Length: 307
Length: 307
Image 1: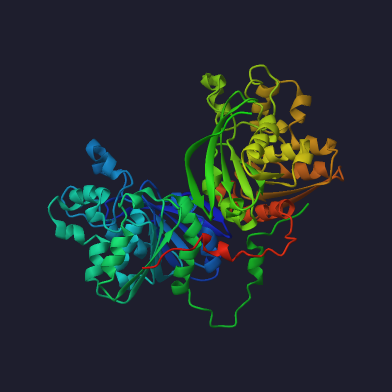
Image 2: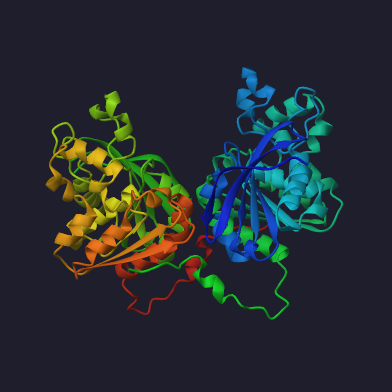
């Protein structure tokens, strides 16, 4: 197990605290950085963990800054992990021709092409290495859920569809649902798996994964903005996921097309409370004792001297 | 009156819409850009306006992205204007020696030194030109309040202390309260007003303004993080403002020192709801008719098809 190094300064937020850590990843063979938000409840008890996978172009802090998630994490007593979107500063990043492909557009998958398989194993990182590190390093429970936005929405779907036993719940905002058949996915998958191995591509494509899914019943909440340019140009294809999942009674997709919203974090922050509440309902057991001594929490976000 | 040019695309957010405009400023002699958030209520009625002045290093979009303000603006039916922090791309910006001084560290004041008086008149811009433009261009009421963070907190205090008749309420987060006596303020004020004209400096210093204030009773809410490095190194000095205001019965400062918070937008987003509620209480008259037909609003942020 690699060692965690706290980077940047911890920042108090909604009564809890946001911290950033870097560590050596054994499956990605590079240094990785993530943020983790501990709600104020974490000072008194173990809390479950919600993983948030960010979209193309983000880093480990972007969503913590721009989605307002921490407000609702403290409301429900959930920790939130914001991983970086992919490996950075690997030897692959030194090859100019791949720059466009690499700039924050790391799909959650385990690459098989020899050029990529050393560093591009975000699926193993997110489903195995990172949770093991989180659970051994902090006072959190093993209960976890996963959500994501855009490229990270694809990642959340892939993680839950391939490892449903790990997650209490899954949801996504404007996810890339059918990467093996859209431009950005084709470009990346051709590199990760080779141009011709479409069977390998389909192992990382939610539209294909839902059709072959065997596991516990899996409800999936998806919010999608109707004015999202990537949606309108059919790069995201939640409708294809809905159609494909209709063939599998184990999967139920609730797709909410939100009128007039586009793809940015303005869309995400608008619906973040719904998603966190959904995950809280599966992650946080209802109170079963008579400990309702919450009065002391009141001052945690509003106290202060008055002069 | 200069013409508005919409820049960027409008973005739906919490049922309302965020838009960005640029225009030629007659008092700053350059192009200025601002964002404005219209809550969903603005489609049905005129709404009052809360001005939010950002801290050093921000632009007209930073606070809209990172403070979560729009959620509460729609909750209370208030429009919010996010001006840029100062003039950009003026001839002054071409002189290398001033770069550090100019990068987003424009204090709200009207400069008198001949090098600066052409472009650095943010006080006139914020209290006169911009509100006139907003009120003539959009369906908003003339009721307005003002708040700000850090350098923008200084600006909010200066605007309200010098033009109290304009604003229904004022508040600030970690404001620079005593610029004529701290490093960043001294550096800027020496340029704006000359090294020796301390009387001019004091006209833009809240600690001095509260002592000479004559006007309606003015309550001021200030939140300040106890772990804010600028606070700990005495660059902000809210305590000096509290002491100075004690000599003037017209001014009442409520200073809430929030334990463990520092200076960033994580601090701001934590307390934004309190500030917007304070301003809403003065800006939004209580309902006095029997129109409670709000059922139609329900779907505005959560509707969508389910497949």
